[in-house]
Length: 345
Image (cartoon, rainbow, N blue to C red; front, side, top):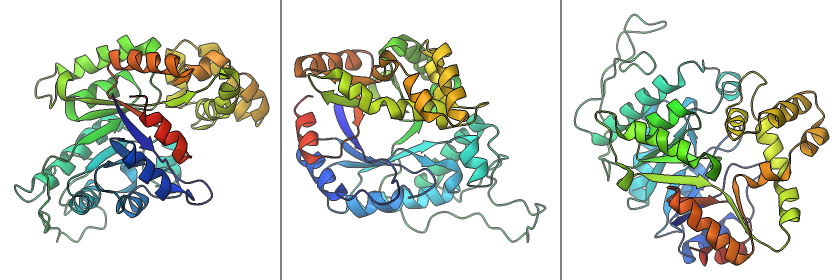
């Protein structure tokens, strides 16, 4: 089992002590540090800025949103950071949701599976640098069709001027549903599991195995990484910890998406919380966030956490590892907490 530090995306401003957190993670033997983006701070600038002071941890995006950049632009950022870090970059990609894609980026959200497959292939073609990059797919055509709207017809197939340090920069995908997880196992090098649950471990592994079994799959179970986001807390007061994280569960289930389409809510329904999810969504969407918060039971908060005494936490980590998780992506805002977590694996 490895540890990854998830710095996430910024709120109203930067993470004030991020350099100290990154330093503590590297000193404590963490395998990787990740940044994210929503509709504020971007994912690459903080990763490069804070990563400049590191020498051993891998530097990952978890996730870079597909709609934020054309695949060639993402590949440019990736090959640049991989050079600057000496080959320590992890490309983490995700489709986000229709509210962000259509509301913030002004792009259609449809066909997320097909878009992901095409996007990943273009990125790989850029990094391979074997020939000029072309793509006949409908989502990211290269060059742009001469008869396309506003086209000049002067588009030219190119390959990157800069030679990538690695032609096989690992690509991990954020995925929640069965088809998306299976495709991730087929075309990617790792899975970013935002809400991993031991209750669904057998189901997750069945989805992954479906992808591994497809013709042309890149990886096998033996060399594929499963990075699960998890709050890992050593405490004698589990109730207080659950109360502290209850707002986050309510937000993702009830507020991070539309009533008609919320991938996080769908995942919690698969865990068996369908009735609760319906109540949380209804109350959150009506503006009664306090009632939505109160509707989230302890078990639902604990579902995706590792919490308890030190011995209990160590035992839970072993259970997650046995279920196929290769990395725990933890969120921490205190260097002392990071150093303590480093002693657990």
